[in-house]
Length: 216
Ligand SMILES: Nc1ncnc2c1ncn2[C@@H]1O[C@H](COP(=O)(O)OP(=O)(O)O)[C@@H](O)[C@H]1O
Ligand SMILES: [Mg+2]
Image (cartoon, rainbow, N blue to C red; front, side):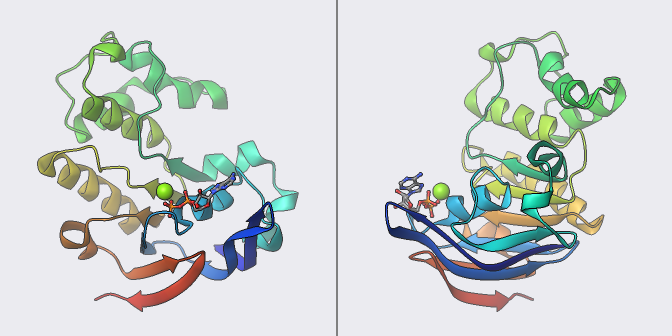
């Protein structure tokens, strides 16, 4: 479904990503690990088409990125950042945003369901997000991101701000999506609690794939 062929990314003659090739299929669950500064976030930014490879090419469903409209691509390949990026309106306005950019009707029932799935079912749509805690805002960001199911979900340590109970809740929500065929690439530091869910682990060191392992 997603293929990276000899992808490199350089800034000022410095190679941040070096000749990475990777093939990702529907339902894959891949943990991306590696030291800080090794290029993990840069790799996800390349896959989300926020930056373009200096060398090599990325293909989605057989088509090179150069031939896909980036906005269209980002509806299929969704990138969940480490920190919440809500706008300071209400929960409802944030959850309605994905429908708005697609020109769809806001599905309030789905929004209620997502709010419940992230453990915030006790809030209503009129609650303003600026009054919520960092962890709650992050969970609403996740609910917003999953209002439409992507084909590939990229997560950048998306649960690092959450307590154990809530990260487990979010993890099970996300791995249920993998069961439905969504490919998951997740930058994670927590070797203990989440590794058991992943099919594969990729270690990035100094911009290169240092280790690629199947997990059981
Ligand atoms: N646009 C950029 N310009 C210059 N350096 C960058 C840029 N993006 C990333 N880097 C550098 O590339 C390296 C990898 O960064 P990053 O992908 O964020 O690492 P990780 O997510 O593994 O911690 C870091 O040294 C970072 O400073
Ligand atoms: Mg990073």
